[in-house]
Length: 237
Image (cartoon, rainbow, N blue to C red; front, side, top):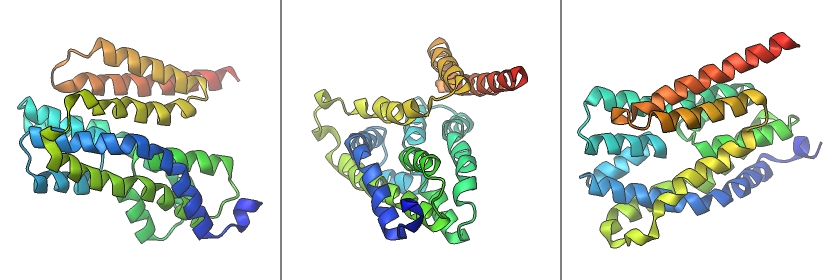
């Protein structure tokens, strides 16, 4: 009952504190994107515009890699959209929790939707179903505030610093750690685990497919696997 009586401000602070641990990976992740973007030929304005408009690290890295490979524009758009398709699933999962919020709040939440804010918010909502919609929105925006400003700031720092950052710093360690921290707590059911195993296996098997299309193949196979396993389990009940 404590959550039901908490003010939106206290919920905002709780969300912010939940998002703070991701600072350790957001800073090197955004630094790395700034460096890679300038190395790919983007100037600072283009780099920051991409971060402000897209605000999706994995998709931005994918687009940059394909640009460097001089892939066709259609392939770049399709692959980037496929990588970001998880945002559609995130949105669908958030609807039962914040779907009744005012339109402007939902629009802002959609723009600021990132892996970290989704991950900590959904886990909190599931643990505290008594939270009201204003509390849930406040918690969500608190988690966002711990992550998104740093993404913009350190993308700029990375773009400005560029090659001044020594390569031995290996900033790319932040990418797998981010997703491991988000995905691991969510693997609670057999369909989840089956989808994860298939996605990892397929991504490795199809790693040699041009233009990173192996990621799309792996994602589709994983989604089918998760759905089929869930249907199979329901029929057994």
